[in-house]
Amino acid sequence: MIKEMAQAAELLEGGLAGVVILERLARGGGTTNWWHVRTASELEAVAEFWRPGSLVSLYFDDRISEREYYNGGRQQAMSILNSHGEVCLGIRGVDGLTINMDFIAGPNDLADFEATLGQASTVFVGSFPSRASDGTGAMTFVIPDEDGITRTYPY
Image (cartoon, rainbow, N blue to C red; front, side, top):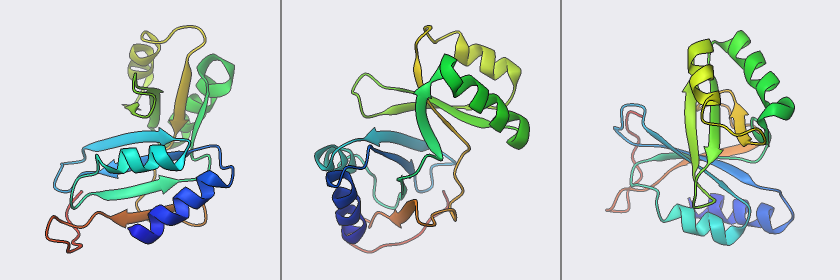
């Protein structure tokens, strides 16, 4: 985890626009937490919230992109929804770091999501990332348990 944090901080300090973070909670029955950070200090602040045993993924590419909903974001969401049957749509939380992510599975879900948006709302949009989809644009690691041992759990 230390190596991954150092790599992410270096990328952020080198001019990367931001990192989307997904925490899959250990034994959480699919519970997730999402953040978007722009600086190494924000990354460190968010890391304080990660729970022992969680599987954390950092995304440096645009698989979850931030964009204006009514200026391309809706079209991207519809394309993903049509091809994958679901799409992740989220808005930035009041703390400026948290992403309040919704999982949209059809037109009714999309209408409910849109009812909460203003005309110029910025959203995060993309497909739910697979645990095995790191490649060059992402990294995934497990947070050690309180005893310092890294174990994997159902997520």
